[in-house]
Image 1 (cartoon, rainbow over the protein chains, first blue to last red):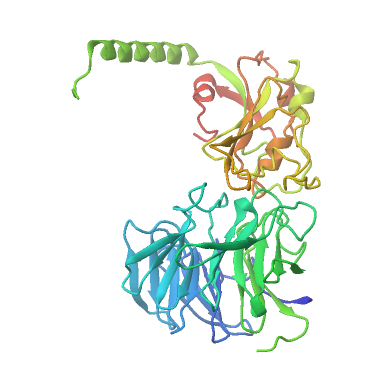
Image 2 (image 1 turned 180 degrees about the vertical axis):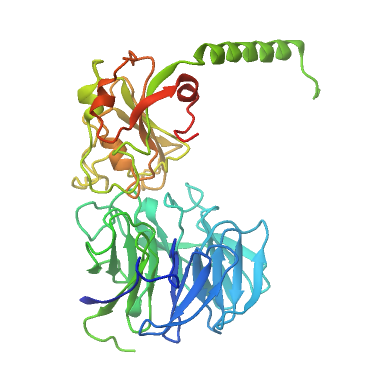
Length: 277
Length: 196
């Protein structure tokens, strides 16, 4: 399968209305919009890349997720802020029970948050009662995330796909924490594997059960099929070599968004042939 | 348990304090050569894809150089596949790990922390210790550990028990980044950061 690099959004010359220090989170909404978190703000773009709205967050956003009802959850250090789709602050979860929140997902009415400080995914019910931790019950007492980011996404069947970069894998978990399996292995030469000390750093779910991952130290994005077989390498040599923890998102069209962390740009890739929607 | 201090503890603490005070006084005013890891090309952030600099090996008047690689454990990720230990661009072996080591002097030791899972070696942390008797400060591991490939936990340091403290350090003369300079001995000995 082939992908075309179709657009670059932002960059150093984008002026004061663009991110100035960091882009750490991307999410593709069901409405076709792209949501980005960085610095201490959220930006929302239409499918053509035009800025629809922007709003401030209390702390620098590390990640964000868009709920089925349109609420936008922004993960930050020690807290999660919940906004309406229009950017109005609805609620904030604060307290010592949240560490460094680097990914958020949903499992029915439950909310899952990746706590990089605890190296696990925490599962809460709609009343914010903690149900269980995911990824802690192993010999390393958590995910191996030397990069300081724990990223995951939940598929339509409720299976959690989490990057475990220190093990060079994307692991699959049930919501109750049971490990179902993994894809990926180390390989520094063949792009079928994950190179370096700790890759992939970030993960998103694409269309057709595909996984989209980003890697550091040879910054690149890759598309894998549900069995972990390489489908496409995106953006070889177009990202700055110093990038790491590049946030990634994929929308219902199969379009892939990658946040480049050095020059603060968002790269857009599209399947060469349109996906069935 | 008693909250007070025993006579022996008081004597020990006083003795340590007096010894530290003596060493501090002795070190005051002295300068030693040390490497600023934020300037050294092998560890400087943002310098990606550049050639490893080995001038610390080539220029030092001391045989095997007075410069050594040091792993700052507090920053180390204890990865299964350490890019400073392994040549991560070498072919993958039967064990799923790179088949070659990076260090030409085999000066890095890799030890599992805890018991290794025989079915899954990736399911573990590993400790990496530099054998300073073998290391000559060539900088290869330092460059490989630099972000974004690694976490930048390995840096080059002048070992003052080996350095003869020349007035005109040959490495300093050759260093293209002026990364080796004279520091107050106390600062260097205490391991304070270069900017402290």
